Image 1: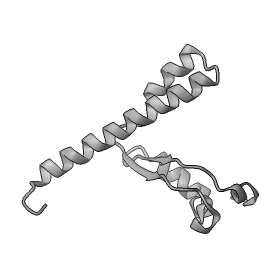
Image 2: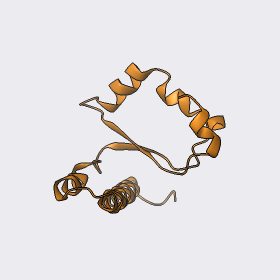
Image 3: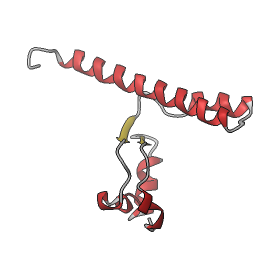
Image 4: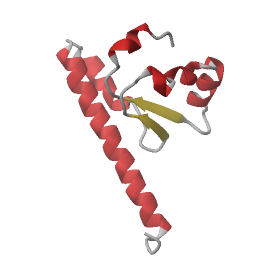
Length: 106
């Protein structure tokens, strides 16, 4: 790894993020189409997520012991981070909720 140029590592990272975004868009397209979305709504899926934006992903079982409420502890700060025009951030959250999660107040 130490011999791999930084530029090549960055290219690999960018390609991986692009692949993730394409996967998300495809999955969401199938999901909303299955729920009867209109062609316009399905077309809008192509606009979600930007491959050139910092993407933070959470792809594990969403359980209370992982303290998901910390994400919403300071909603104003989270909103400021997610809507920053000069340093945008996008979140990807995936995975099944734990059965008891429905009872946890976030």
